[in-house]
Length: 496
Picture 1 (cartoon, one colour):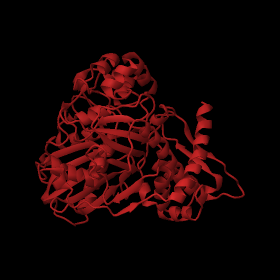
Picture 2 (tube, one colour):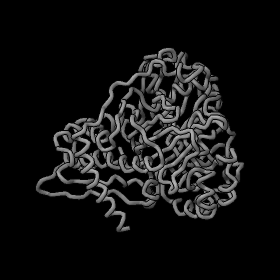
Picture 3 (cartoon, one colour):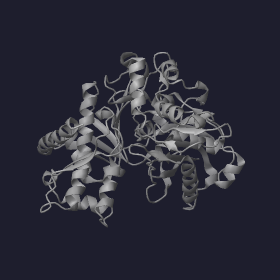
Picture 4 (cartoon, one colour):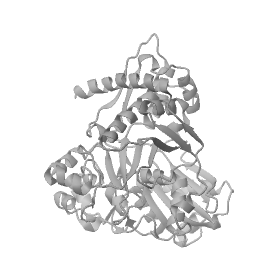
């Protein structure tokens, strides 16, 4: 019995097939091989085509089958992970009305700030656990205000994973977890937020049918199944945002457990059983995949928009022919601190942990006679690690005090330079595991289909590849380097 997992990322679509009995990865594929682009029609805007995602999903699945490492007829359930907070609008015929306004788009910041004040900061935080910020509800309000003719055609609004599930099954559903990440959900009343809908004058009928994360969200009809060499009737049994899904894939489900990821964006995600919030909404709280009205499981999320995207930008802008492994090798030849080069990685939209300010990326301390590409490679990875430390200190001030973080050995955690900087800048041990978002989505599909009765059964073969501990001497050095980096950030913030 096999499980298919899909990860709808910003850069690409990943698809994996997992053996349900052993939880072993049988095959994986990515499409496209090079990163998908982001359309930015104005500064601070970021959009992608939902139809592009769907096309790439189909091509990724067919590319996966072409490896001939399994029998597609044995796939029994599908799970979907997806980039969070994006807005997809469709009409009554399920036709896309506009490109998706994605997670790193900043156009709705002022609308969200206005909603925060109008609802009342204390009431918004108590009921929503967040400011409306530039989350999905505020993005929809922007469409209503600026594209009224298009708004009138909307039948349903969705997050990216809901859209892909719709394309696979024809059914339109969502979940409390998804609604909370869009800041549509009232945690005190356990219902759609009247405050948000009334303030923005949004039609609640736009919201699809609400279902559990782990359940049947629709079945693949014959035409779609035939095109994708799947068996008709296969159910989609799991949908979750990429960060809750990353936590699931690392078996982070209980209070006190913490996951991290460092892909296009960077995240620390801590599970709590309290309806907690940050007074300034610099970190955000959403319903975790196993949240219920009787068993509170919340994900407290620190997000850094500019993470792997900085590493990619540095690679492209230097004109260097090196691949990422060669970049990491070159960076390892530079001493910690990059000989005085500091990089702020905030060039991918408004940063929540900086009060939704668009700070942009900055390179500080370049000496034309001393520094070369390898210094930039290292400084970018250290800058990302320091941004994690900055955000973690905010989480600590809110009572989140992890000692160990779990992460998949993917993306930035493939770099020894980054991992060393992360561990010693934060003072936290890191456990690295096999797997990625698509594997986690496959495991989620197994739970949603009832193939696994409990998470313990789903993760019985789950073991770390390695554990990296902070070094007392390196931690002291990185503490001093972090203070220098933080001063550069402070200077930049004071100029705004």
